[in-house]
Image 1: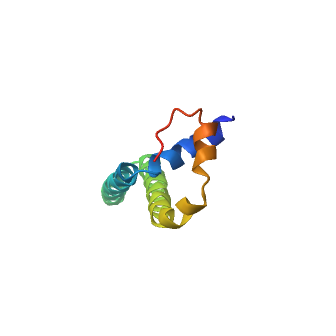
Image 2 (image 1 turned 90 degrees about the vertical axis):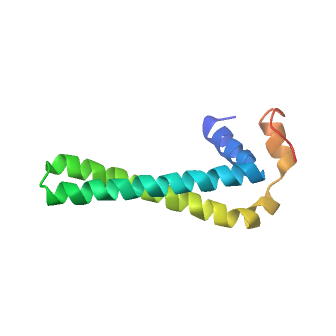
Length: 102
């Protein structure tokens, strides 16, 4: 199995349990906080006229963090609908049967 497929199947398997969903929501909250801190860094960088490269790097990091948080939040909100369409037996078999089954 290629690494991208294995990564996706492991991510699905981790979201299958309630603990996995809680962990994903916690990561989303941390990403929100990181995005806020980076936004403040950009604002202060512009106000105090820090080097443009530093402000641009912070802005790019902020954009990436916000995009990751939004993607995670959308996956969490769509999960209850998607989970019923996944063949969990096949996922478990493809991962080698070493994953927890529910």
